[in-house]
Image (cartoon, rainbow, N blue to C red; front, side, top):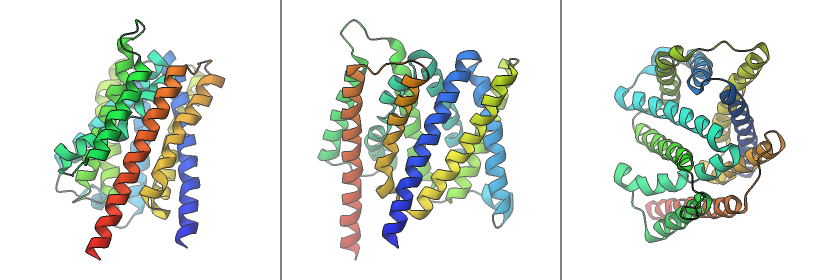
Length: 296
């Protein structure tokens, strides 16, 4: 049964990364035509409605989902994720999908590096070595010192840092709150923030682009549902390595739809970052297994 669940979880994670890649492609198209803040605001309206509907259908309803002893932490998580989405979509307009995601894949390394000071977790020398090698990969992508480095390349790195911080705060919040509570606060607090900011940047949207916007909203909700199902049927450590396939799917969309190209330094640097990230995941899994055996 466990093997079948793991296999199903892997396929669900692959589907999740594909849907997220499609969502990023649509976001890139809309952000090229309209203000990023407005695009993210409309997306968050649907996201908030989605998490509220899920909360309403569960035992205890919305009141149970919203109950938390750490509202400040939950609100900060939601605001950080909303900011990260804005920054990342802005990066798409500056650098395109491929280079933005190549840099963004460094976020697991940032989580590993920051887990010590933020969560108090021990990070051994092997993981520190992987983190260092991973950031060498990021430097290969950015090519500083060769006369072609653009400050815009820092934008997806900022998005990766924000997403890593969001991930760490989510793990911190999980010590007291359920996943349903964190999910609810993520959607609602982000929607409030984006509405307060995004209404000032409202632009009339062409009818065909409204179709794309509606598709973006549905793909966002569907991707989150797939991700929830993934973690319901399989352990995170078993399926997480397959999350890197989003970079592959995004690259196909970037090349085939937007006419982007895969530069040699981006491909090499991304491969280094992914390998370093996979190693940190493996070390974390090995450490957890060793701890479980000691406690047994």
